[in-house]
Length: 454
Image (cartoon, rainbow, N blue to C red; front, side):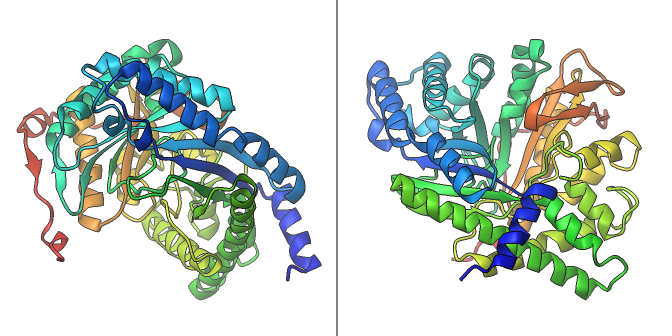
């Protein structure tokens, strides 16, 4: 039974501490849309999405009114399109037609983003996978709401370095294709190792092949709530610190669970998972970097940052799994530079570098996220950065990701404005020593020995 004190506490978290439900995401299987005729396939996809998700936005708005909790995004994820287009697509341009259909469907139902323009190539690429990957620059340039993700590695299979090399080229081509928008296309493109099947967050969301026909996944957030709670225990021991984070994460997750169950009931779609990730925004006070500084760092990036982030991530998960039996997705703390004012300030003051961010990704939910780099950065260097991050995920049996934005025409010292939740970012310097001989070897980095557990 919920008592009046809990209601008041939740209202305070919403009104003063930036608590929100970051997204309700409907995952939709498109396997029953497959057809050898491309026009028929596109018709099937559009009809399936606009039928299943037709009430998502209205339902989210109704829950917002009834619960008094902001729901920032309503999103859709679909089965990786490389699979769905396998019978009908015979060129990258054929896949672009599907991207445009997905975009039209997203606009019809009114969602913020649609994810799943994806391929899973951690062990090898089919011809269809390569067609989709090569279509990404045009697809991102000609759509508004479609997001793309490519999984190039896993703990079980190793890292597909042919795909890593290709993705370095694709990131550069996507930047060029959208250079009139400050290379915004790359903000909708993420490269994964160990991508989860049930992630509700963009740009990496897709509807995994093991999922039901349709599912509701909810992503909660609340960096501001955690920071406020920690401000009440300054100077206390690590035990008190950890208990405070756990209790706060429990409360945040309970809010998300209530919203998820209500959305599931109203839409008649099964509830899947709650993603516990602390997802920041450019709003003042809604910052993961701010939490790290509240823990005791002068700036995010100072010595001790990786340890503080590891502590935060673990305690968020411990508190969340007590609040819900169905925790999934990424679940932890995001560290996107452009979307977190504290991270932006740390970069501008020289406290936070690309190398320190890479170290931090060893212990957080995702990886190098929303990082703007010089537009002149080579495709091989981008591939090398991707390979480093994939290796962290592979060895540590965790999800890692890379969302780099080489902004054409801009260099270190410049700032790029993406707008909205994507925020703005200073252009960060990149190590300019050459790695092309490594990237160009070809083949696959084998899986680590601990992957063999059968």
